[in-house]
Image (cartoon, rainbow, N blue to C red; front, side):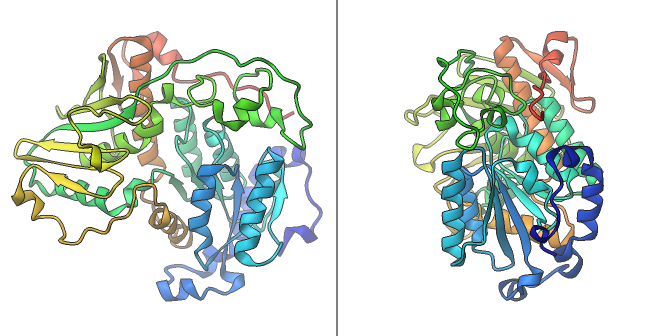
Length: 442
């Protein structure tokens, strides 16, 4: 039943009663109840009543890219968009309505109003970094399955709470680390797993040069909240005066708003791929040591993970990589050979023999493509299966990134207990696993 025909709960009622909403949403999850293991053909011909109803929280450039792929699925219907900026809300509605040929997509300034709707099955969270974990947690508590753009948590504690909530609420979760679903990256990992590289020795993950910026832009008059809701834009981040440049994108690199000194911009992808290649989805490196041009990490099994700094803008590369491979390149090195690949889709190996192990015709899908990753999310909503970038995969790879970032920020080697997810003999580093959250919900 369409909730627009029902009395709408207030935001205060929503916050007080999220557990009841979650229970109601699970019981009312019609696509899940009816559509286990649909074939590709049946997905393409899904009836309106069998479609997964999607809501969007935060619609900027990256979300627009994600959403365009999701709109192509006949068994998914985007029904609502929430954003704190009026111009982004309006642009999102235009995109969705033009695709469907109607004017049915509804708009919300406050995403809690979207989450209170029982007709929405899943959400795409694509806000700025500061909101990813908090919005995803509230969505799960409201009974929604969640696709969250990365970085999924701005601190180690955020990543822990997010993963724990998804398990407790029994929600399907997909981190937006879509390269797990892109063919050339999958093939490189499969080559590492095959043993044809020999014993893995070193994994290389490219990352941006880390940044530590605590400066404030000059304060400007705060706009009407229907134009830009500054309180909701800030969310759990520390308060500061409004400046239009923040909402235009200048929050990136700011410690209060960004994730891990900007290390997770690429690291959430490249470290994740190295974790996968090393069969370490259930653990993480135990040591993190910063150097001038890299952070060297070590797993308990002796394998090294090297986070190579990439100056920004994109230009000269570390000698580990070939520039034609594109953004987010990774390299897996064994004692009998190596393989590397990046977003341009090409795979390069250390020998003709290894190159012959690759498919003759590699599908050239750029690493930014989210089609297969999104499809995996929606298929798992129906089957209640485990996604490619599930909460546990996200948790370990993101915590590894945050640990590396803290080693760089503190300028010293850190050791972590991968089970307790605590730094060993370093009280200062442990304090930095979390940040105080501002009370934004009033």
